[in-house]
Image (cartoon, rainbow, N blue to C red; front, side, top):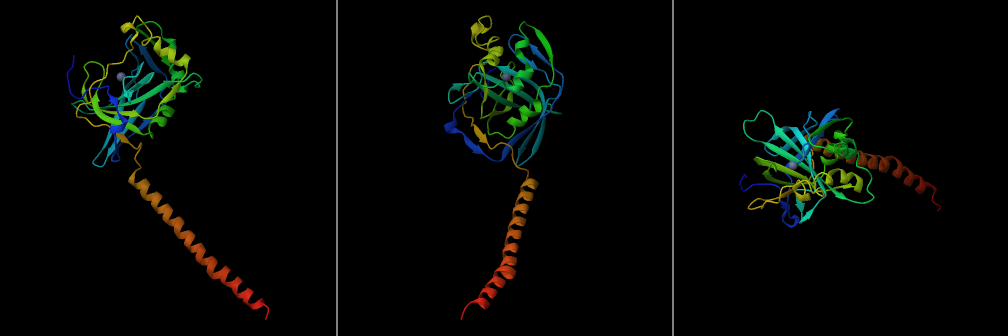
Length: 271
Ligand SMILES: [Zn+2]
């Protein structure tokens, strides 16, 4: 087993997360169709067809990544303030043209809610269609663009950890979306019937790796997507123009309307 000091998953203790403003990730999903979903006992995975790109921005640099796969864990691997979610998806992104490991992983979690509407992303993936291992199915019209478009601007917990399956490579930058999605009983059963709740797999404990110590690492909270500086400059310019127009119209009103009305009322005032 890989022994390292910067392993994943971890418990995220929100009391000790500090806000990070100079490092953000934006995700650009693509509606590639069809893609292949494979089920191999321990996992359910879409082994990509370039379903998403990720851009990591910091004050120093901009890095581009492309997705390698997206897969699921039930129950979740990460916990937030000690609470485990019912389902967690990981999209692994790799930086192209690197000879060393340079990954980021986007994590999205779902919590069970009895009367939750069907999640359209999970509906299109149709995990319930695969029951024997190993098996694959072709899936079409998965709304990757909507799913990653939902995740991209959200606040995310970020820390440096590892992949959670062998060989548990380190130097992985994690982005765990703070807001959780809802999942109803029928959709959750498509995942729990494979792992958590399936006595034939790891005694029904799930396909999640156990928590690793945080150690000396720090978890930060990012403010979602960072506004591009040119975008920010155009917003400021637009506001200044609006302010200028407001002042000019006030001056015109004062000079030509208010003063004329005042003069007229002075002329007709009774003696
Ligand atoms: Zn994973």
